[in-house]
Image 1 (tube, rainbow, N blue to C red):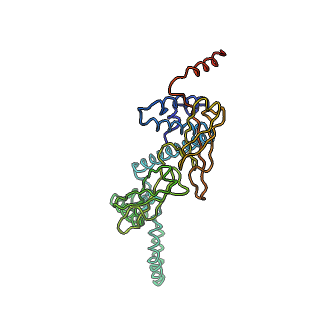
Image 2 (cartoon, rainbow, N blue to C red):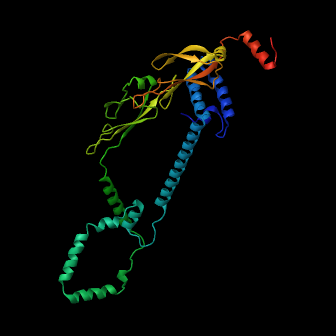
Image 3 (cartoon, rainbow, N blue to C red):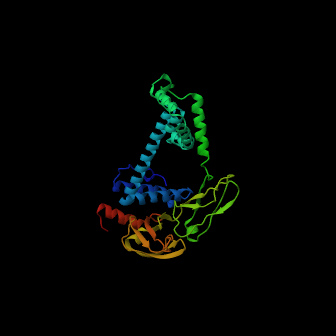
Length: 348
């Protein structure tokens, strides 16, 4: 869904009255009954209705604003992290006696010295045993030589030579490759209708290898849900097969998913909105009788329990019929006179 503020054309700090006025103006302009020649009028009207539903509810609006702030914060953090990594790659090596292994350990965040020390532990123990078996004078001579701070004991370099550095990088890459055991996951989206979800239709996707996979759609499925199918992703020789990660998208139409509830427009005329009426609405699985209370406006809705999407426990959400006032196709003289008298204070 696009940014609801952009859809309605209001600022993020807009008040409820401004949002309501923007919705009424937009709904009147894009209503399908006023745009018979526009095939996308229904989509725009539905999008405007979803935007208004989100922004007029303080809790939903607050949650949406918080999610947008968090997403923007994460995006800025990622940009700062990438910039820091770019600077780290381009800056000159530190001139502090750092050799190739130390440099690679700093870049990759792993102590390569400790990794090399483990396989050398056994040869060092053997060398110590041989030294202990030797003559004591030789040991004393060795200690005296070690106690003298000669030139050979000082660091002989300030930075790692290029060949040593390249060799250390190659060893690091090879050791990283050895840990790869699984092929990449197959990431895809599938688009279904509300009727598909209720009827548990199993849509299909095709893998790059030409294999067809059926995606299970059933109880608990909502818009944006991610389904993971084990061992159904990419195939690479000598690697375990990846998973298929499928995101379910419910196509926009007459019904607008809101969690497990379904929202639908209920257009009624002015006289029925004022006086109330009995009407029928087409639900996802068939027609449903609806009672419209007297004096019902476009900001009111009628909740029909148990006609929404199915939850994992088998229970169903509700169908929420949102009232939309419509004028007659042709102007009515009596209605015009009545409205004029009400506005101007005249009584017939």
